Image (tube, rainbow, N blue to C red):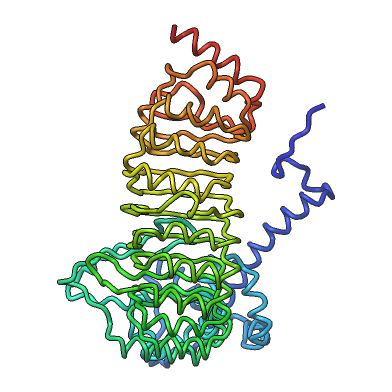
Length: 507
């Protein structure tokens, strides 16, 4: 006898936990809708209409008017009164506990329409705000509307546009721990708020939100950051645009900071100098950093070495569009606990890395991520693989200039378990095979949109390697015959037969 596992098809009289939970959820949603609708209706009934002069009664002219009069009579003779509004008897603390357990769509929409008191309660539940109008902060309205914020983003509000169309583009570009707001602005139409206005806003922000944990700000001074560091002792994440060495003195006051993102220069908006001086100040002040991102920052071996020697808890380091001097790569070996290294949108890596014996390596490194980088120099890429020779995961995505000869240097990373290649247009099947056959611990492979990798060029050796993988995603081009994802499909058993048939068809 077959039985269905669907909740909808079960007997409603059954006592199973799954059926009761389903009924409870349906009743809960119906009850919430009833509470909100009833409260709005009652409050509308409490309002006494203005007195109107008495007029002689007359018979209704049509059926529609008669129905309207009957509805008015029903409302006027309704037995409901203020005493029936049991919701108003609840304290604010109790209502907050109830509202905090509602789904997000109820918290932000339906509940805020009941009354002004419910609107204020809903504002007390909001924890994260992205400000688009600086006057909302400067006037103090933000503090009254949202008194319990722990996450404030001031980037959009700090950009002043001289045109009606703001013309901004903010978006998630590099992943969860990278800069999550990119700005593409024109110098003629957009300017930044003056430093003194930003500092004044930061001072007010720190005085109202002592529990602030995350802040995104642009064009502030050392004094503004010192006020935030003094007033917000629990600050954990800071995203600072347009910073320079002098501003970094204020960052050093954040003793409990764990995530820091510095954007020194953005073409077309601002150009600030972050050198070894600022990196050294940062390293000596923020010793509890776990994740650090440097975008458009200058510096050299000395600055990266200072970070490695002082920030012993650093696990994730990202360089985006870096302007580092030659020789900085060898300083990564001082980051003893580094687990993830990312290079994003870098025009170069290190043109003069030095001798191999002086490079060292990151012993705890597990993941190397290269995205939208220009890999034009073979010596530079080889030095990077030497420093990262202990990695278990290698991700190369949309990098320009990666040829077979350069990719061959990945053989230095003997412990690789995952290789992910996407958008490597110049890499061929032979170049891929020359690296994969030397990786004895390889378990997962992803090849996506690499048009020069041809399925009809897959050798028996590479085919046998595919059969031993635990996870394989093979879509080098749109004409790929292999399924887009074979994870969990018994690849070890069935892959060999597939590639044997593929070879027969190709011959």
